[in-house]
Length: 339
Image 1 (cartoon, rainbow, N blue to C red):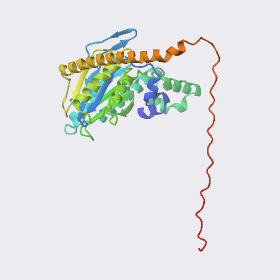
Image 2: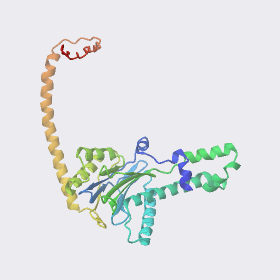
Image 3: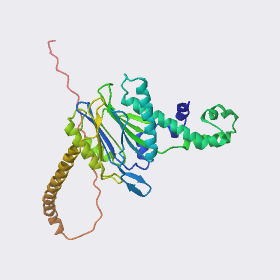
Image 4: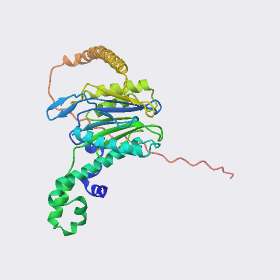
């Protein structure tokens, strides 16, 4: 019944990405990529948390393993709420695995479990905030509507329509026995979107910067692990340009069923070192390019600089329509006189 009530209120409908973009952005970055012919997941996240005017980087990671093959990456207006909901997801996944140990729990089923948990919390909080003071529940609100005065019913409906809980974004990344093996899902509150076709996922205020790196690198799910690792690292570094994205980086890799673990520090150090070398090389090359362009600018503008300064109204250029040549009919072939 809760899902039926939820779908009847426009404010509770699944939120698409463009609706999120209209709101205050979530200050963080979480990125994940599929690679090695869809057999491996590489994930990275910052640690920055924002509370009012205070930003800090705690020791706790935003990458939270659900199973040894599936992990979640958290972002939200209320990170404490996101963690609480993820813990409930973990409990339900654990119960399902205990009940069916021979059935591998899928990444999609994990994302769907998140949606159920989020919807249940939304309905429960709405019930507490909007209905409990009148001795009503969601069930009684539906069954007793005919008894309410129209103005009272309209008031409660408006309150339910406008009720929200803090928005959240979660990446679910992992391996299972479904399809290609590696899967990525983004959960924006109760809306679940599969990112397998793209081969990467990014959430938080730095997501646009990170996505641009994956796009410019022509990232594919078939890319070798070394290319995907460096691309993901650079995507995270690019995201640090955005306000509220921290420089501390947590990493996670899933290379096989049951094979999730943190990436070795030496691999990240190699990425960091090579990234810094690359940035210095690009900066030096750009400086030389700017000098060459400046010389051409000076040469091009010198004749103009010698002219006397005069002021006049710009004349609008009117494009004349190009005359279209008349198309003459194709002459018919001459008939043979003797025919």
